[in-house]
Image (cartoon, rainbow, N blue to C red; front, side, top):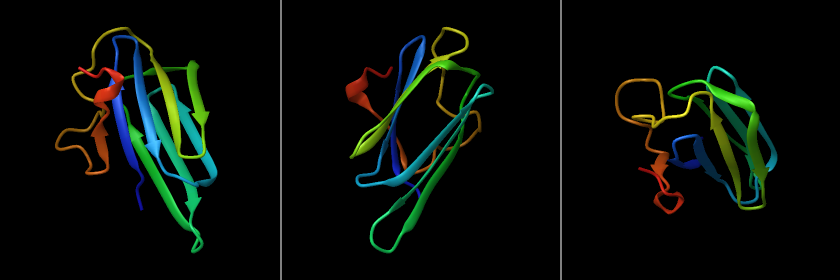
Amino acid sequence: RHPEVKWAQRSNYIFLTVELPDAREPKVKLEPEGKFCFNAIVGPSNDVFEIELELFDKVDVEASKINIGLRNIFCVIQKQTKGWWKKLLKADGKSPLYLKVGWNKGSR
């Protein structure tokens, strides 16, 4: 199962918000080549929610910040190279249904 993910960008950052209230044992992994992985357990039946995203370009893991809260996981991902990405994911085709633009974060 996939949690809802909202994203936005600025020229030097990507904002990712994983909407998953009451997640237990959340794990977030960000790799320099632009791979973002998340998983957590939710609910009394211990459902596992996970996502793996191949971001459009490389990122600076050390300069990025991840905040795990009670209702969501908010990530500020520093782009390796400043500039606007034409899309979030490297892959061609339509974005997954669980991925939405977070207009309130100032996406373009």
